[in-house]
Image 1 (cartoon, rainbow, N blue to C red):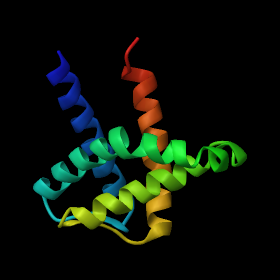
Image 2: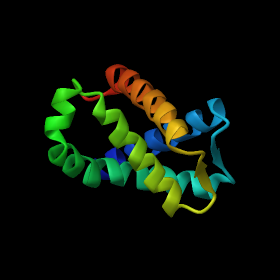
Image 3: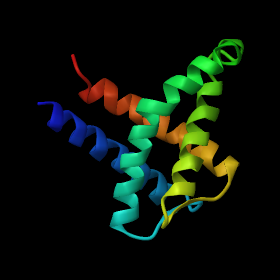
Length: 116
């Protein structure tokens, strides 16, 4: 059961990145392998790195009413782009736009198909 959840999490992250790449010219990938690897690393970054960053930036996140979470998501997206060859994001502004889109679509998917 846990393996199925992990595979689903990976697939959803990959789908979100693929959708962002299809909609925004500034998010690009050179094939299935970089996209799958980016989806895996983006999921790991969200699971491991994001909670630490949220804790470290909690006062700023509270002060901005949670909007700083988009900056954290954009930074994680840029980190994945820096680590995965063949997956590119065209700068911080593009990462912010893609992070906003990914967050919104992820929220919708979670509301529709998330655990109950």
